[in-house]
Image (cartoon, rainbow, N blue to C red; front, side, top):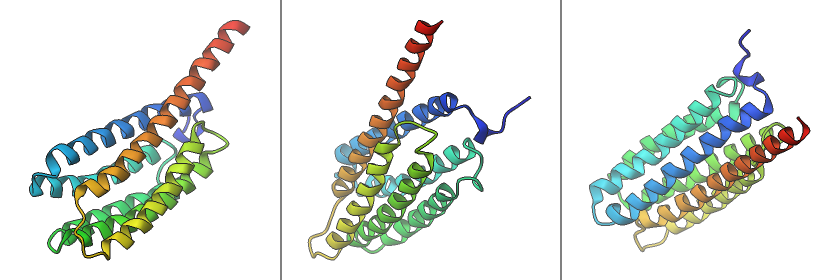
Length: 196
């Protein structure tokens, strides 16, 4: 008999989340490297990267929610999908104005997606490991978003490098969660082998 996705055993859920967090960390690292090495020199590459980032976030949240019982059972992630897609569209529009508008859009997104990530981590606290890092990540994202909005009001034009720092910190949090789950899984296996 097939179990519903939301009824996965905690160990199975942690294995799935571990892969998910590693994938998110890897994407963010690649994005940061591309932003710093190519995006700063090429406006067209920077524009593409700035649109892709929230689209990726929407896709990642959609996949995670779908594999964790569906969008209806994961409302914070459902809202995160919608917010990220709306922000991707806002970035497209903001790119026709200037980078201050783009940074402002990213600021709003960082606040909303951070709070939604925080909500998801709190909901998963009792069933999945590594959520303390996701809680810190969500809170840090909301704080960073506030700084983005303030910085967007300044006369000095921002660049993609300003957003790359934020993405780099996000990658670190995802990596910490993934490693935490990996270590927890190894400890469970060791305990099981000792008890066998």
